[in-house]
Amino acid sequence: MSTATAHRRIVPRVLLVVLFLLASLSAGGASAKPPKGEPPPRGKLDMFGDIGDFVPGVVDDPVHDPTLFEHRGTYYVFSTGILDPEDPGGIFARRSRGTLEGPWESMGAIPLPEWTRQYNVNHLWAPHVVERRGVFYLYYSASSFGVNRSAIGVARTRTPGDLDSWEDLGPILTSDPSVDYNAIDPMVFEARGQWWIAFGSFWDGIKLQRLRNMTEPYGPIHSLARRRPDVQFNPIENSQIFRKGRYWYLLTSWDFCCRGTDSTYRIAVGRSRSVTGPYVDADGVPLTEGGGTVILSSRGNQIGPGAPDVLWEFGRYYMVHHYYDANADGVIRMQIREIEWRDGWPWFPPD
Image (cartoon, rainbow, N blue to C red; front, side, top):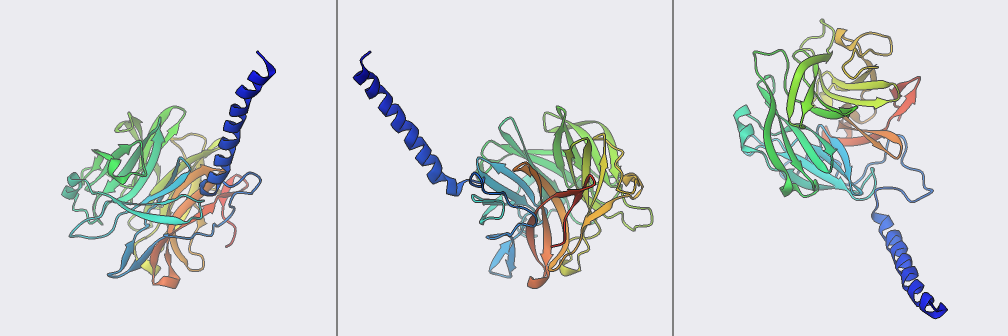
């Protein structure tokens, strides 16, 4: 091969490489990851965009019970739907093509499946989204306040940002007055090749069961956490389980949501060497005996923080939660915080 021929073959390849690098750089502004060398967001993030708003007759932008996930450089938060007894809301969705801070953009809702109407729903509650082998699964609650005649349903898609692409698979777990638990607030995760579903609200507290094929709970139901016997109604819900190092951590929401600035929600934690427990708090008290170390409660204008969901990103753990904004008559908004660690326990420094 002559030098001239080799040169002609090499130059187009070089041009292709250069064009690829230029395209990558130009797309960097829309990437969910920060540019190389720039530190990722830390602490309590400065949220902006559509992070929750309500003006009667003008805007209803709910962000209650958020779940946070990422797909192809875009962050998504799915949440409880719009409250409307006449036309119950499905799961509400928003996204950020920028960073975890925003700009967040409301997308509308995944429609309410007709089967859920038998549970007297005013809207669907407390979703959780996970991904397995390129398929995204959306777990959600169908119920009404004060009863445990409830169901957990699931939908799936490969394109979570296309709200019309979600295929509903119907209910996978139900409860009624004949059982001691409430089948709402699903949270699904993998532990050493086995998938699990955590659930429960009030009644007998937080439960855990194995999953087969992402849609079939099976085997024994494990009890993970409840409040002390003297705490009326056993107000514990919104479980979130994740692993760090040798321990599994269980976050729960205590007390009462949904009362605007009178809400008393707060987030408590316990940990265990085994995914099925026993979980204990920082003082060694089992969560099944009312234990739990409170790590986040009302701060400043953020009243009743609760319904945590945890995302591993940038080599750190981030937690999304909702709160009631005291500066806006209790509008429900979302906040993302980096989880910091002190003596092996999650910790949030003062705002």
